[in-house]
View 1 (cartoon, helix red, strand yellow):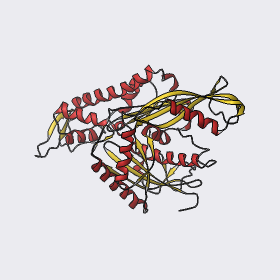
View 2: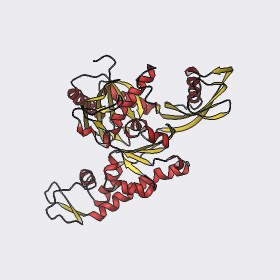
View 3: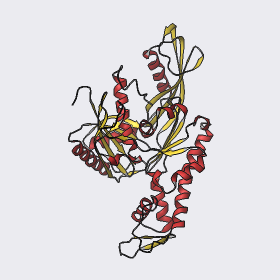
View 4: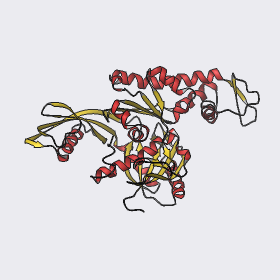
Length: 411
């Protein structure tokens, strides 16, 4: 390993897929992707582990494939967490100084820790504490108080908490697979490190991750997080609706969603524009109407997007979203997704795809690059790649002053 290099292994445990990415992070050479793998998984429901043995087995196999790809062995992993057990709130804490003093990191840490303590709940763990703004001696709107003088320091802190048992089970299944958990990060925050530009975070943007079992979303403005949430509806529910509405098996419904819904075609001899022929085990294809498929998918996706939209409206966060809405995750690959989203949110929308540069491309210290791994240019790998960047952020902040600490914020 080169001097100054950090090897990071990111593990994205999703409801339908487990993904692993191994990267070599260097202050001059950027974030080189050296290993990656993905495998389907069973044993999770709505982002919650229900069969630890099954999930651990897939985690082990996925990381082992990534290790073979990278030609190295890893022990520590950075893992995501999501699910409806995740809660967030904004909490204000105050620290009074004995006299006017110059604010340093000790003071900011104290006021953030006080916000964490004040919001503590039995059975829950504060996963992230992100400062929104500071108020010094009554002066509001201060984003970075370091070096200023004050006798009273207030901070409005965005707190993201998880169910402690859920988090422990999350870590335990990784340990069962044979690996150590270096850090756990909320899926929505990890996504932000990969999907959003610094300009979008500053101007204000809504980031939505449509996963298999749940949907996570985060509101950014002024380079920090103002709101975050998760609800237990995702792409799996589209599959369930297709199976029930069209009397299909779950396997047939999933294939229908992942082919027709992504504008790929079944083997269809008659090429009827109004019908879809679905292969069956007895080699007698079934035919379903395209309009029925559209209606089922439209209804579920509209319900999902409307839920997010109404939450943003009720919290009066829409004025913050100057840069619109950015979507990631497998649910975005459904037919006409961006058109549906633009109609509901009535603002600019886009689907983020990870930016992976080639070795000969000019790249900065924070850019991903690889001489292969073209398949990582897929929105479903946003979380795993975001975990890589988040790991670099945590490492940089722990070793300040450092190269990444000057380029990234923890949010």
